[in-house]
Amino acid sequence: MNPNEQLRQEFNEWAADGRGTEMERHHLDITEKTIQKMNLRPGERVLDLGCGTGWATRLLARLVGDGPEGSGQVVGVDIADEMIRKARAASRDFENVVYVVAPSHEIPWQENFFDKVLSVESFYYYPDQDRALAELFRVMSPRGRMFILINLYKDNHYSLRWVNALKVPVQVRSESEYVQLLKAHAFQDVQAFRIPDETPTPDEYSGKWFKNAYELRDFKRIGALLLTARKPDVRSMSPAQAIY
Ligand SMILES: C[S@@+](CC[C@H](N)C(=O)[O-])C[C@H]1O[C@@H](n2cnc3c(N)ncnc32)[C@H](O)[C@@H]1O
Image 1 (cartoon, rainbow, N blue to C red):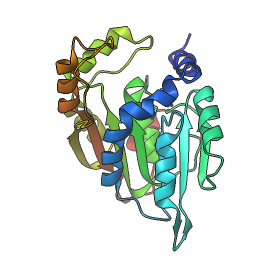
Image 2 (cartoon, rainbow, N blue to C red):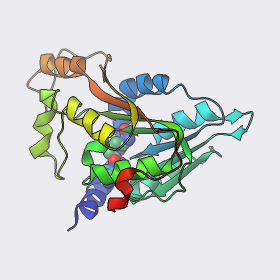
Image 3 (cartoon, rainbow, N blue to C red):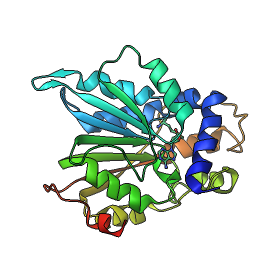
């Protein structure tokens, strides 16, 4: 089975057994902090890549609502059709949200379109991160900004426990490797931030990923990695696009 089909099947299962909805609870604190940094304005066009059930997409849609140049628009893209089905069902009241089933390496949208991109806990699943970045560069508007938030990266050693336990292969890079990767794709103003999860941790931990509550608290203290970058003021393709 090719890696994208494997991802689609795996995440359709997540959607079916409720894990898609459960993720809002785990990602809300770090995502809200990221959205604050996005400095969204009414009228902006935003892409939520790997949107899952769309809870963050809807937060974005409220923030870009009506502006002087009309209503902002948010597009949620996900490889798993079950995730998108749930996202659409939960977004019926939103007129400025569209969901599309597509993989990160083939975003079915016009070039130079999005002012901002958000991607929450999804980027490390992409089998070809280079190709995903080339696609993001293509669909982002000149001077558009990208916000990639991930909990699995080398500098948070607890997250490495997931690497072999997950049913799908994942990419494992360090903060500095990611910064180099984004720069290699001609993104500018590349920065890395740590986003701690400041939600309370119960004293007792009974899950499978941490030995005890102390470890979970420490994982949350080290925090997620937020990568931010800007597309240069050009309407051209990414230099890497020529490869594909
Ligand atoms: C851990 S979930 C996070 C979902 C959502 N962003 C959230 O925080 O609830 C990862 C999501 O990325 C999607 N995904 C994984 N690989 C993808 C790819 N290559 N292209 C598009 N979406 C992908 C999955 O289907 C899944 O919905």
